Image 1 (cartoon, rainbow over the protein chains, first blue to last red):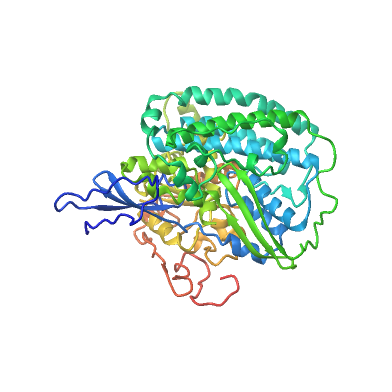
Image 2: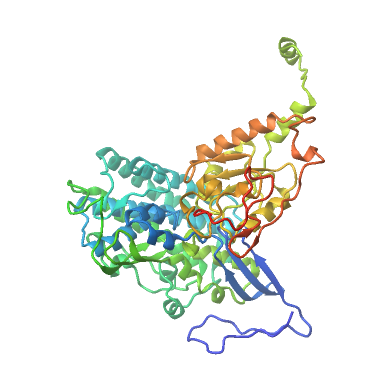
Length: 391
Length: 208
């Protein structure tokens, strides 16, 4: 193999790229294909890593192993029939995917979800965020070698949340719950009581989780100062979500876009300082706490009323020609749906802006110069789901 | 052997069994699955191994990342045409005895993504599948049910004669051809003998 490793010709300000030192003499570089079957790749993802000894000097992501033609299928089916497919984008957070898609279509068709539906949406989205962040931290620790235990804690809590989803929507993971102009069914008083009881137990879980992990010596040693992402690079590459906030950029669509009814709730946006893996872990834990705060406020006063906009039509839905972009703060970042309507029952163009894929684009810049064992951690800290990366 | 005599001997601390029963008892209670997640179903597979559903009760909690150490491959999710060669290759790398569970609609037939140009319409075109679980995704209980079905299947396998497991059959096929991307589809479109109906390459069916 040649030793001619090229650096990028022009370097951005704050570009996190350590100088590449050519191996001495006839040093040989090693190319390792991590994946598509690799326990740390969270599915079917491949990283072609170029190594000088243990040190990473190049990383080429290869994806498309789970390309399921989501956008093409959506352009061939009616608007409503795409709703179940959005469940399968980021299969941890089906309800936030539903919401983002419903929001885009509502913009297109001029519908508005009633008050009670808005509350139910917020409750479901924040529950989704908690279970996603808990699982993400669990998987990160799994990659670190804490085989099982943190993930078991996370999944114990996740099962409780999934029970709530199942009671309301009929499915554990693929909820298919939001509709254009509201929600499919109403939450009963019993369900809301159950949710209140469940949320009351959540702070204990986060405390336990933090006692287990936050000051853990191994976690701190493995994550602090590793995989640093500078804020200007993060902004330049379009990174969003906890990744961006861990780098210290105050950007949360719930505050910026004022979608739904998030204006009514008191919550803070946790920010990181160093942009390393530990900050990303910490931001996720703190976001769980803020989500619990939102849930407590939202569950306190859910107004009575319908859950569907009376203007909404379930059959023969044909929005006027036009285009719309609906975006929400999904647990992984900015999830957007861009739709162009030509007046027919199917969208003319249907495009997903997946946070997982765009957060993944800076993987190489975060990994360069680190050991190959850290690549696994840095990759885990991005928190991706392959269904959303490849679509 | 007389059942009553067997029980009577059992009380005396003497266990009488056949080699086949003992052998299959050991095999069915120590199935190690491969740590291999493809898509959405993988999350339900992970949920099955966690505390609530606890696959360890079936002796199957040891997920091995390497195909060399695994007995069971759970095809948990959509197999795309880019991934199918890798799945067959991993199956070939597993040592006998090996079993396959096709988990979920996508692994069985392509499921909701069947009309997609890049989705394989069922992994059983390339490798033999022992248990199919319908669902999108199947619940963890369904995966446990599939496990029990697989255990029953292993239990019923005689060690000699017809119906013996593949690894005791010197005539049986060990390796399956790995498909390669062709002009329009993977080639071959199916492995001979695995899929009940031969699919010719280049057929112009709307769904193929």
